[in-house]
Image 1 (cartoon, rainbow, N blue to C red):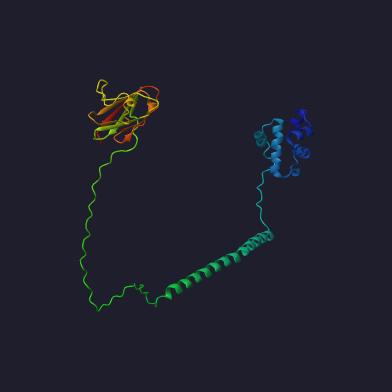
Image 2 (image 1 turned 90 degrees about the vertical axis):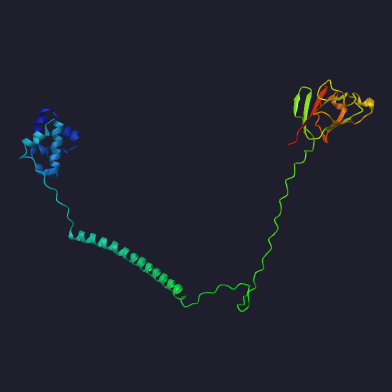
Length: 284
């Protein structure tokens, strides 16, 4: 390795910088003075590192110079001295001695609690063995066993109440809303089995045209066309022989109200002539 280093023109300082091996160890390796190396293990490690830095085959080097290289010595097993062993044992014993009182205290406390529990339990259950069983509380009724018990008199059955028959629903009351609207035609429906009796209450002002016929426009008038001239107010048509009345109003503002079979029609404000149809339908 020395020859290879010198042939390569490398100095000891350069090898030291490259391999990080102290120069004195490099000199010891080149001179074969392995006693100055820190043990055989480090000696072989330094030789390997040095050889690799020079480009030499480490395995071939070990094989060629096997007799000259230091042998790997088995590492001595670290044995504790008697003093160290005693120190370790003392430390372990000290730890155990610290825990023993605590464990003993826990066991003693557990045993005391268990003993108290069993004593109390035996007092509760054992003390009550001679006690007579409690008698049930007496009721407020006293029964004399020497007296004859009277026989129960038969009770009369309560009369069964007859459920009243369902009353037929009364006819609706209140204003009648518009059922259908088609331009100036307003249709109302009233559920009744009676004939239609109509009252038309008109105002003196503004004057309005009122005409009442049956369904067709050609039907006979059932009331005068100009109620203000006839002084008939309200206009009353009783028991009309038709299922539909046609009431023609020229100016709705001149009509106060229209009542059919006691129920008032809900009138809508309109500046145009209105045709009011009142249809009688069968009551359900």
